[in-house]
Length: 178
Image (cartoon, rainbow, N blue to C red; front, side):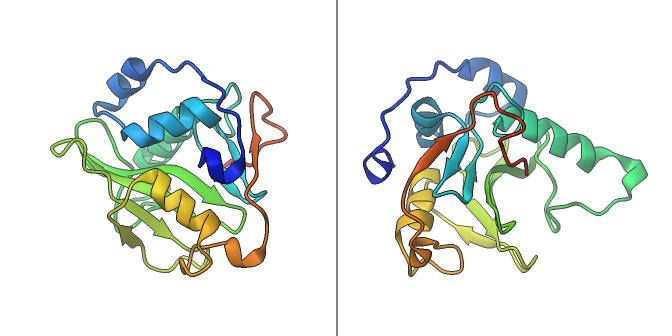
């Protein structure tokens, strides 16, 4: 991803033990590397990446907390936004969003606390269609979205948007929340 975007790694310090302690599971190693190199922000002016950010827009943990509270709010009924799944709750099994697009595509992991280290990527296109299952790393999925025009329905290379990255550091008004 660094080579693809020409990005200079930021070396962002992240307290992974605190984050993983709150989640109750370790996060994928390649995702942690992406977070430390990029932080949260936007690839190719259209793909939002949730990492660590001073603002809420691109902050992975803040976005997960909001999604979990909404998913657990019984006043909203019992339909999950990620149906047929649920938002991951510590010790359970569910989805955690790590990215999205301006077209409302969603990129998540399916996390099972009983199977730490197994993080398939689940993605759903903007039309609310079915979830697509990918047995690949976060960085491989993100790379294919940005660079592989044949990676359908999620590849954006066909639109010739370039492969840039714009950090979202501490700019809630400039970010695109999920």
